[in-house]
Length: 120
Image (cartoon, rainbow, N blue to C red; front, side, top):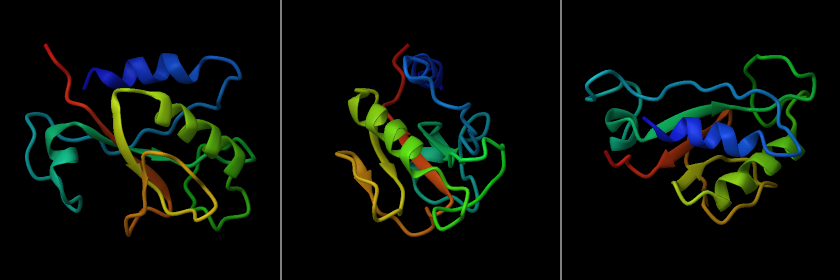
């Protein structure tokens, strides 16, 4: 993928964010990646990021949950907006804003990030 290490360096800039929970990126060699639709997971240019939690635990949840950390999520998405390697991202919390934000069904419990393809 190549771009995730660059993103990791970016988000460690002050103020530091909690560790990321990076989920589905794609499969070796590309191809269909059920149940994900669209070319981004299949090509390795999309990644799913778990939501930040106020209790700091590395557990799932959605934006309706009591432990969902909306402030840290907004801070992270602001960094994505500033990153030229991020094409767009999907997330459904209606109180979150972003210049690259798209609302797409199925994105209440994670942030899907689409990156520009890496160049060799």
